[in-house]
Length: 334
Image (cartoon, rainbow, N blue to C red; front, side, top):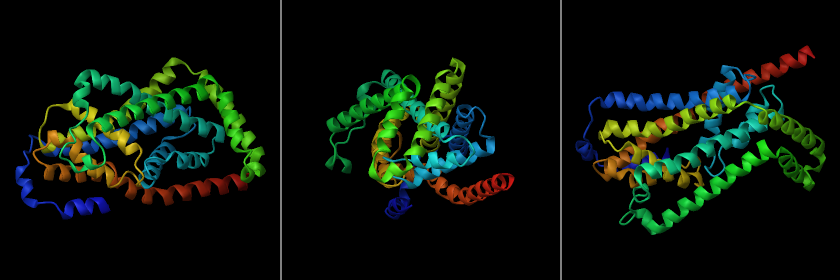
């Protein structure tokens, strides 16, 4: 919110006259909001699939939005994964299964990315993938060559991480067990080693179960991933259509893939400030001026980021109340 305030504070209202509103601009704005709904729906469907329907639709809805809330208030480099494990552990499913679902979710997300990057490179070309940084404020910190180097190193790391996740969860889950148990040898975790052993046994059991899944299971899970991530990126394409009516959709999509790597290592909560700052640099070709690009950056974040802060504060107490009632009911039954 602070970043949006400073951008708006310096905004020249006369620049609005430069906007070349496309036909059906309002419809494109509505479409961008609808894309965010599809994004969350994709997350919900994936949770439902990965949990073998052990999670009902209400649980999937709350977990998906709380996961987004956790990501929004955490540095992008950390994300909301750790919080997701805690949240899902309260939903009456085995801790090992919970951990497996979160790790497989991460695997599917990274798999989407490492597949989509070469596709976009083929469609738009390597040279057009990166914006020109010369003359931009960001060029003080990073050059054109450094941006390319940073992106491809980041891509290589994500590729290696994706392979590691697949190997440890689906191919050699016993390795994951050994890695986790190593942590429980640390002095401050030794007293909880018994729980750690139970966790790894549950995780090993869940991983073996996932390893036996049919191809249709993985196709459905990846299709849900494709829906959520494509909707995340297409949302911005819809927004650009509202403000300028541009037609280079593949390039705008590809630029977002590059932006995502930069935002992934951001140290601010939800990459706040950094996302708004680099947006005009990456999207300047699609908009009539830098001032308009800054305005669209605010609108982009108002649709894709800030709502989750509000939604999280609304859903969190409701979720806590439901979980507490569920626990009390189980205790009374026992």
